Image (cartoon, rainbow, N blue to C red; front, side, top):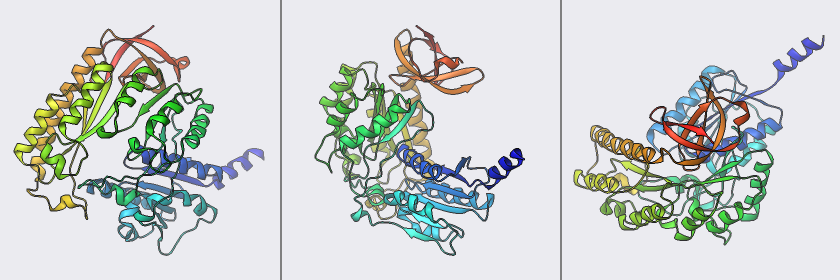
Length: 441
């Protein structure tokens, strides 16, 4: 009898599934939203499973991201036509009417209103027409504190939201509002909570993390200093930080601290000063080079990744060649690149000449080859060096993985006792293009 009651309870249990597109910030926010549902007794299932509620955290950084967001909603509807569907995130903020046109979406929640999903759960129900909950970007003052807890070894830790830069190609200030953050004291409370769960590494995320403190009269440097004093947090990684906000003071702190990882992600977007001025970036190539050289001088083995946008409107063959020559000359570890997609309402839509898809593809191939070469050179320099690794729970063919302090993916034979431990290793060679072999010391 007890067995059948258990089966009945399982069948009656409400199920929720999540799908997240875009940046690490979205993943942190989805994780927080998932806890709202767990606290109300929902069981979290995979997105391809039957669920009573589907939450799609959308992205709008490119037209392709918009399309993927719509496809995810359609997949949820197909899986369970009677399910309640909640669309949130940047696409929901910028183009709620597009999502409203997709029949069956019950709630459209803007990027700044994700905390209201907690209230929605209390009286969640199917809607004949979509309920749209959004805030104009000029009125966005709320900060939605978020952290991911999925893997139990690392957490994406949101410290900042919004952006004041209004670059010519970007809609983020309209999707997420102006730069804002919680206080350092509140961030420390959250970090201590993460540490209490046994999580050893946090990755600081936000739209523009170097701008932390603008809404509280504090500084990013002060936050970093405070986080290094949190017991239980052993490793802190910086998310993407603008070159004009990466101060010598911060670089020196990373060099001195055992907890701050020698891992930098610095957006370049273009290696042409002409293009940088056109797209309203707040630095030039001279400043950018000085940051790379400063990091390399003080932290020679650090991982340095950069961002590039390929095929911006206005990027002629000559200006693209300036970019390729510039990035070739930098001592970097990796290039994250994506092809430009016009965003309605941004000044860059009007720039000429416009780059056709074939040219974008060819330019992306050129940058990809440069990136692969830079990454291989960086990895080769690490052979024979010693680093500390945080081992993760993922396993493949009796092999487990982890990342060194300077963000090299390594592998060793699976050993359950190594999960969520930090061990010193020696890099011995390559397993494949992305993964290196080690000896545990």
